[in-house]
Image (cartoon, rainbow, N blue to C red; front, side, top):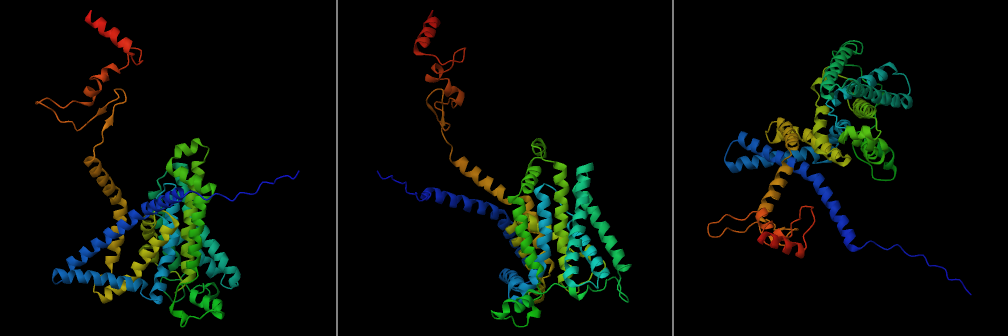
Length: 463
C-alpha cells in the first residue's frame, strides 16, 4: 500500500481587506508624521509673503509678485543647478550631524542646546591632532583626527549627562554654560598656542593629506572610468562627508529602532519611573545618550574642518556660527526621525544658500531666511495642527448629537427631546426612572426585580 505524502501548501496570501487596511494605516502614520512639519512650513512661508508685501512698494499685485519672485530666486539659489545644489549640500552636512545630536538627546527628553559647543570641541581637538601630527601619513592621520573629534564631542556632551544624573543639574543650563566655555577656550587657542605665524586669530591650514576629497573628483577617479565623467569637477565643492552624514542617519535609525539601547532610551524619555521599575538604569542611559549626542556633533565639526576650505579654525567663528542652534529647528521639524532630519536639514541648508541670490536679484534682505526658520520653529512649538484638528472634531461632534441607549430601562433616551406645554425637558435621570425604567432598577441587594416581586411591592404600597 503506497503511502500518500502531504503536498506542501503554498502560503495563503493575506485577504484584500487586510492589505488595504495595512496600506491605509501606513498612509495615516505618514500623514500624521508629515502633517505638522508641512503645516509649520506653510505657515512660515505665508508669513514670509506677508513680510515681503509689507516692506515692498507699489500696488498690492506688485507686492505679491515681488514675494513670488523672491521665493523663486530662493529656490533657484538653493537647487536651481548642480553647482548651487552642491553648495547647499555643504550646508546640509553639518546640520545633519548636529540635528542627530539634538534628536537623540530629545528621545530621552533631554533638550540639548549644546550641539554648537560639542561641534566646536570636536573641531578644536581634531585641529590640534592635525597640526601636532602633520608629518604622519594620511591613512593614519585622517582616522585619528576623526576619532579625536568624535571623542571630544562625546566627552563634552557626557559632562552634561553626568551632571544631570549625579546632581540633577538641568541640561539647558549646563549646555549653555559649556557652550561659552568652549567658545572662549577655542578663541584663546586660536590666538595663542595654535595661531598661524604672521596671521591674526587663525590656525595654520590642516595638512594636505587630511583634506577630504570632493565627491565629483572621487566620482571621476572611480566610476568615471566606466561612466561619463563630470566636467570641471572643482566647481562642485561638496565632499565625501555628505555620504558619511547619510551613513550617520542610517546608524541613528538602526540604533533607535532596532537595539536595546534605543528601546531603553525611549522608555526613559517617556516615563523614567516606569523605566527604573523595569530595571533600566536611568542615570546610565542619561549619560550615554548625552555622550552619543556630543559624538555626533563633534564628528560633524571634525568633518567640516577636514572637508571644506580654508581647512583651518578662525577666531570667534563658533560664537557667530548658528549651525548648532539651527539643528534644534531641524530636529523638531523632522519629528526626531532620520528621514525627517534629512529633509529638515535640506530645507534649512537650501534656504541658507539661496538667501544670497534672493537678496541679490529680488532686493529682499537675506535675513528673511532667518525669519522663516524662526517662524517654522514657532509653528512647531505652538502645535497649530492639533488645535485645528480638535476644533474640527468639536464642530462635527456638536452638529451630530448621538442618542444614548439606556441599558437599565431597555429604551432609548433622546437628548434632543423638546419640552411640551411649557414643562422642562426631561433629563437623563428622569427618563431612566420613568415607566419601565423604575421597574428595571435594582432592589436593595443590587438584584434586578422579577415581575412577581414588582406585583408584591405594588400590593404592599396599596395596603
